[in-house]
Length: 85
Image (cartoon, rainbow, N blue to C red; front, side, top):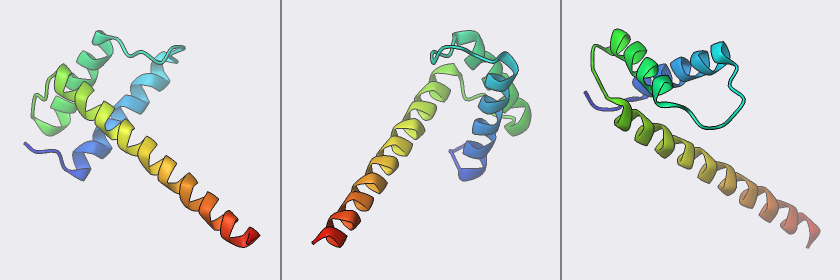
């Protein structure tokens, strides 16, 4: 099954619930966390994505979010600079 918006949304919901339940202190997610996340996603989608694929997908999405934030900040900065001129 290919990655679609609905699967991404479900993945984030599962990760959010997992983090909330465990109240994680650090930023590193353990293998058991990813195994449980994969199990939950498999229950919903009936597809076994595997731990490695979930990690790669999550890091890819996180990278895209950081890039969007950076683009937004540059856009805002350029807008402020135009107001100053």
